[in-house]
Length: 211
Ligand SMILES: [Zn+2]
Ligand SMILES: [Zn+2]
Image 1 (tube, rainbow, N blue to C red):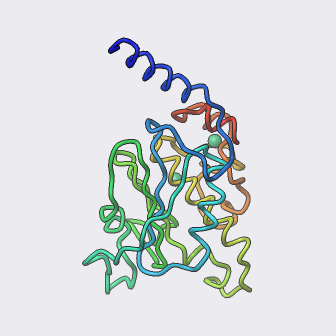
Image 2 (image 1 turned 45 degrees about the horizontal axis):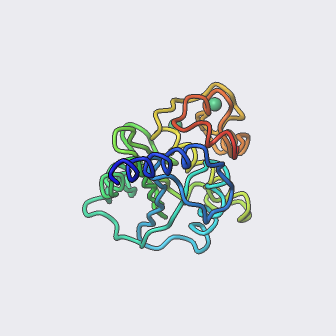
């Protein structure tokens, strides 16, 4: 009896390994891959989380879910710079196991010595934060372009997630892991990882199937 039970467990595990990954957002990711959790800080623009939940699984092969909003962390505001400290938001995110937590915030973030950051990742804990304001055309006095804004959000989230999976910056200017010095760089990039970066990712087979 005990033998049969053990065999069933093993068969179940192998089934997961060989199960083809689909682009269906409602899919179940095997537990050892973890999930991606989106965490808004305060209020963020409506529809951003939903867009990510719809888009990310198709690129990554990871189940993606949104969590409830949480307040801005205490002492995250720097009154001298009139900006928020990126690391404070990173530290306020949950962490654990293979799961990835991506914070999203409508605040202008910085990390010394940089003037500002689009996003920030902690490779050790699998956490990342993306700041939304500078991804909008209107931040630079240009006409709003929601589609372009949402595309930039997806690229920044994919980029920071890549860092949490230990990827570095990629020399390929079309790869989402290419370093963005400006939004022109972000706009040039495609919302996906190049084959070289995909090969370095954990469970890269899963990602390749859906890339
Ligand atoms: Zn980077
Ligand atoms: Zn690459």
